[in-house]
Length: 496
Image 1 (cartoon, rainbow, N blue to C red):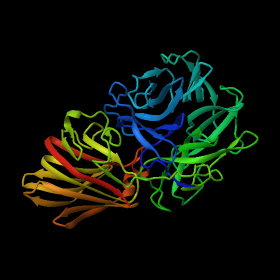
Image 2: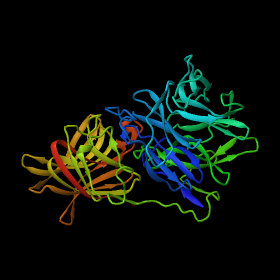
Image 3: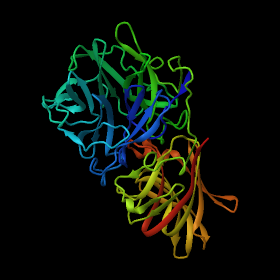
């Protein structure tokens, strides 16, 4: 069967996976967005359904005024003795912690903190003991992949933190995961930075603390030399075995906007690559060490069909699953109905590292039409294509001294420009349409059966290569201005 990558599209970086009985569970980073750590499930690893989040309460994660692309980094999900554990980092606060649950569909515990630095933490369970790993420096100031034993009930360190591997020499050694497979302990990591030089490397040893011998042909998986190929930045992998004994790697990557346009704005996404173990115990990954846009493999059982949702509306999404907020929202400013959304704006705007009245859904593909009807009393409200507080395109209706108008505003770094405004006279309602392609967004006001074209904007100015950071474009509905009230209806994001 042939399956296509990515298997989860849009800004869902740093995947980690575990398997319980016949079901796979996967988590991803969420950075400054709330709720934190999206949680998915699957029966076949190619069709994933979001079932919730791990961090749903303010007491679990401090996000107040955190920097963009700060907050929640690189989670790991593991299952041990009937309990799920998710460990992650609040990078802004420099804190590693984990939460747990006995019900994957329910709430997760309050955070348990571990006094070990670095990022990308991992939990490994063996013989009734728990080992905690991250990148960073050990208790002697030595850098690398660091490990200690902890008390799983309290997070208290039981042994000093010590370096167990220092990688292969690539920059930004991170994302450690430890496995025991047959007689070997395998330590998988990422190097090269989560950009075009990203790669998966690994080593193996006879004990969980090493010494580890690097795979002779590292990196085991990377697309760094595939110039002009759509899929880039392959790295940050987690291994999993299916019911048939096959091994796989879920990992991140991104799709650049064109063959020779080295920009990406959809964020880092989730990809799947097959793993093959040789008789010597070393494994290879993907197609000659690369990840392809599709794999044709007999590992996927007959009858499994890769399905893809093409249309997202208020009616066929759930507010507490697919949608997200910036940092810690004031929920009194949101009123939800099955087919309608009401927002109350505040003085906080999209230009601040704060919590404006904003609710968003990730952009998942290049070609799309995004539309929504907006009715405004005061202030400003509309659709934003949001990368961070310095890089977003706003398509909105606002009230001025002489009535209402629709504006197209571009925010790129320190440049903030209203490109065009259309007077609505005495009307306070607008049908807004954004048409997306790999390289451009087009902004249209739909009125009386006609489309009024306000302008275009290049997608590359919302890319990580321009804006920096680790997120992707989120399609946001927002309101701002003290006393502003807006109603949104007929929302649709349809991918072509």
